[in-house]
Length: 406
Image (spheres, rainbow, N blue to C red):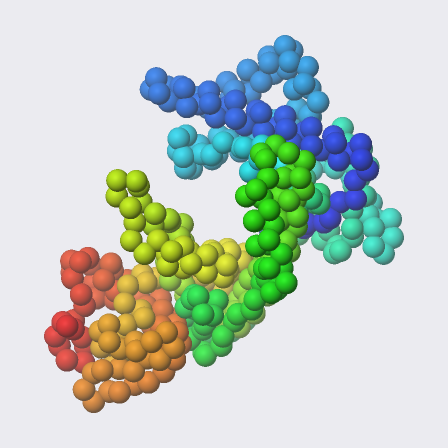
């Protein structure tokens, strides 16, 4: 199966300038192609990859700067644009801004890439028009190279190989009867139905202070100045370390859960919608904007979506099935008797069932994770686990009392 291997590059000054030039050409091709597609859509006509690729070949005869980057790299940019427009819609695809977009480009032909190991710590790869580039040999390639992506993050250049490691997904998990539910939260990044808590801090106190000071400096600096560029680079270096720690945490957690469980159940959370701004418009300002901003930052910091992607990737190697369930009432339902009411959850950590004769007490996140695991065993409707005939706006009837909770 296909997997990624990322390495840090050690480029010469000439190679770094060449990579920057390749990225700028790809950015121009992306923006020009996107603008053309939007103009065609406004006239009710669809523009796809084939005619754009033909026009690109003709444009290279008129514009010499397009010849700086390899042809198959520019063609891959148009392929990525075509896939993005088909998946998200032409008018929802973003422009690649010079100030906000991290430079990157992809070599799609793995047969044109040669990799050699120079020693215990270093290796080199031969890339079209770049020649031999050195990279830190932090792990074996582990398979046949299919493609390579060069990108810049935090002032450093990286190369990611897409390799075919020839692994096959097992037909059955090593422990087929195991299952776990995961409740993703803000206090703890992930809590399982088995009572395991997974969490860590991704930014140190010193880095948080320095990042805040850099933000203050950035607000006072002139756009386009050299000092502003240095400040943005320093901020990117801090955030790249934070992102790497978050990625390591998600990968380790996902590998642990996939190895132990044949079924992993998650809430079907729309992270992008949940972290949308509450500022509203000038005529209709939002409510509790500051509180919502803090919640959005906490959700994004915990990496909910990144953990989901890591689980899906890890499940390919263990035969684990990842299921997403309806999140409705998972934090309010008692995992022992099924009674649902808002008062069951007394605070962030304490769950105490209010049903007569139950009184079940547990950690609120563990109780929610158990409900998530239980919901993965059958079809879940919009209101929970009650069947599809009930209205999506109707609250579920308690199985303990036979009435709708107040």
